[in-house]
Image (cartoon, rainbow, N blue to C red; front, side, top):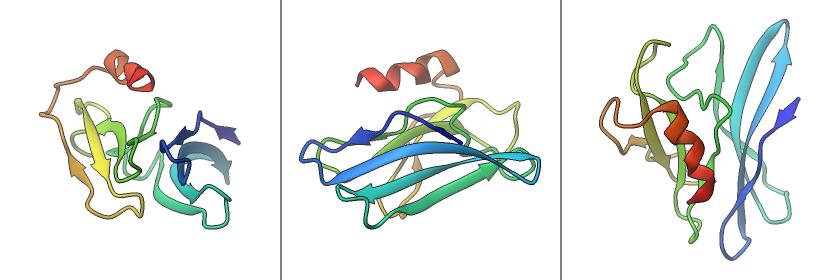
Length: 117
C-alpha cells in the first residue's frame, strides 16, 4: 500500500489523501477523506488499470481547500490514457464532481505544482 501526502484543511477538521494498493494482481488507487480523528474514513473515488482512468491522479497531490469545502485533484478529461489532463473539484463527501479547467489546459508536470498551492 502506498499513501500519498495528506492535505489538511486550515482548521484541521478535514483530511484527504490518495492511497494506492494492489488487489488480485491489479493496481488501484482511491481518494480518501476523513475527519481530524480518522473516525469517518470514506473512499470517494476508486480507479484501477482496467477501470476508469478519468480520475486517475498519477500520484500527484490531492488537496483540500483551506476552508475544507472543496477537494481539488488532477485527472483526465475523458476516460482514456491518451486524454489530456484537467483539474477536478468535488465536495469532501464526493458529491458535485466537476471539471474546473479546459481540456489540455494543464500538463502532468503542472499537476505536480498543486502541492505548492
